[in-house]
Image (cartoon, rainbow, N blue to C red):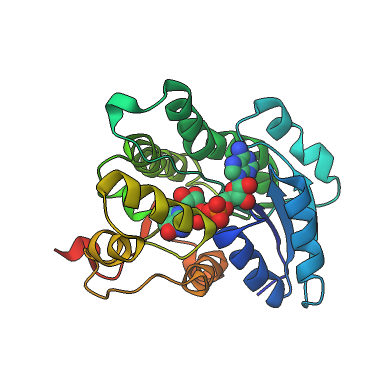
Length: 255
Ligand code: NAD
């Protein structure tokens, strides 16, 4: 595969960091974009021994001005692959859900991907190649209680992707959404604790009775599985896969 410039939001931790590592192993240039600048810089140092190259950029994906300035900030690096991965979670019944938190989740996981797509699409069009890979979730397809903002944002991402797939049908640009069930990352570890409190369960019970219970395969999805799926979507063989939902759910939605 050609060496690509891959821009990963939320690339300093968890799934984003894992995908960054896999992309570097394949020789790509990775731009680790994160609101946590320090963590993004540390990630670049941590991955420096790998074959590709990496740089860090600080960005809040909700900040329209910061995002619009990115192509200029990145200079010679034209983004070939945009991975919209940044995300947060907040677990609360709707009656207690703070309004500003609800808005923040939508801004990070739905408005952010739209702003980034706007920023990078013109150059992708110009070079007639682009891949936009959204990190959705099993919660793009099904709901769980106490996650109303997250589920709404992740469902919205599928509608957004389908629309942009139609708008980019005239060139070699695709947009797809990876929808994993649970992946063991800092985001999930924090959720285990929150769910335990909300449901009055132990942390072990949250994993077995809530997280893995609906999955026939009863195992966390690995970051490598997501990275390999992203690599496939970047390849020429996937040029006709667009507006699609790639579901890595251990059979959750087969029921
Ligand atoms: P994580 O907490 O390990 O990493 C998220 C990263 O996003 C962090 O580095 C954080 O600093 C960054 N971030 C947060 N807000 C940002 C903002 N406004 N602008 C830029 N960066 C920001 O989480 P993770 O588990 O790796 O999750 C990554 C993505 O995968 C999220 O979209 C999440 O919804 C999705 N996802 C995770 C799981 C899972 O089980 N971990 C399952 C399905 C989907």
